[in-house]
Image (cartoon, rainbow over all chains, first blue to last red; front, side, top):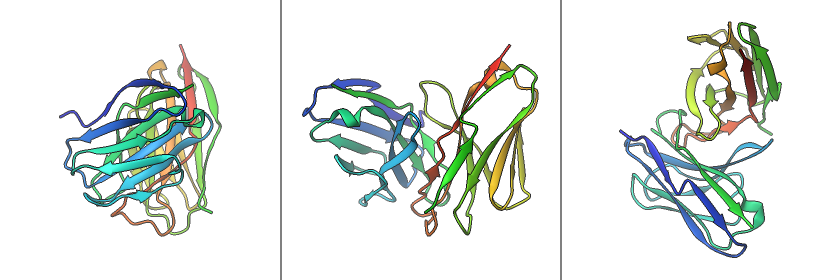
Length: 112
Length: 114
């Protein structure tokens, strides 16, 4: 039982490049989330998916897109990376019947 | 606006020196308050859920309490392995458990020296 997994763990991009962060959970959870964590800013919600086939914007969605590929997988795409997107990105999942969320190990992204 | 504020931002303790971390919130109609622990380079790990004023939860040297406007995480006789960032979170006003959205505070970074 791996819980929530994320790939890659680290990534360096140049401004304007694109990439997709992958997330998968094996807990049969309905809801999945993408956060970014910056020093002094705490965790901020980028996008979430309350169930398979649905996605909604969170607090800071600009510059990102998401895909809920199936119940297990939720990906985050940066179409044209900017230095302001340098951050640590966390994926989380929840059952959808409560507010408890379970987090992956994170992806540290640097955009130069 | 829904807000969650944690204090202090950082706390340094000697091993065995008890203290408390604070989490205050402005969300009305609280539907739960959640505490997480985050170790450096890792994702947050769920600790406790508190639902009503007066409720308390304990885990080893940690005890979480809840009032109508804030929560405290009491650390009794801490050890170096308790060093971590502690985050609290609440559901936003109007939020549904079907979405499970949470608003997080900025966290308190605790360092316990031997």
